[in-house]
Length: 112
Length: 166
Image (cartoon, rainbow over all chains, first blue to last red; front, side, top):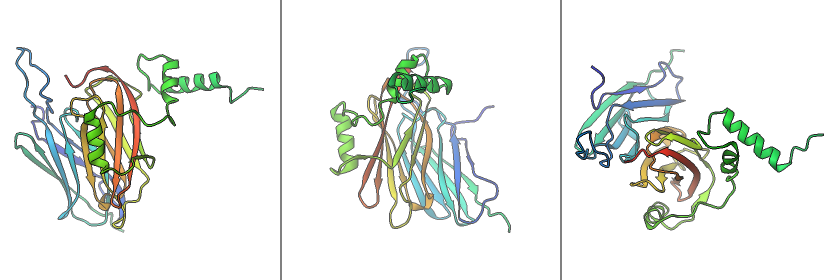
């Protein structure tokens, strides 16, 4: 079985220095249908896409992305984070049909 | 002695550089040179009322100035379903002054205001990458709003070979 809709991964460096600026890479499996295409039988494929992504670091919301179906299938996004606390980085993707998908990655400091 | 400022030679070298880097698809070397030479041109024309409205909403009537932002995309996208985008900025990201949002606008897409990335100083820098769909050849605009009310922009024209929007 391949990944199902909503399966997500977040990649951060294994060990980071306190206060380091790190790159966060995230991918989620989602069709991101625009609603403008038809299937093989000529039936319209309804719009089905991630519309909102919330990025939380510990209990602090650090970023929020508002998307349309113009983001490519199986959306990837990367951004930076100032890693100043050893708390999880959590991302929550919400689609236009009410699907909510959450994934987290631990931020761990390298021991001195 | 070679004449480094001779224009046709410069254009040829630019074209060759782009072709070597794989940044052009079926476009000719001369075409690539012409597209790259757009840097420094006036801001792209606002194509329709929809884009005008989006720009008004983002800027709140403040001037949209070019600078402090880069928008990197391929000159020619073979497949409009998957077009890479990299947005970066040298603007500060401190609690006192930061980029609070970066907007991505694709002029001739069905939904032109493609994405908004709302940020806080906790992300430390503006360095965002993703992949988008494009319907046809058009200007793409990245617009950054700062917490103290400045609006900065970067523009890139992308040639699209295959419609990725349906």
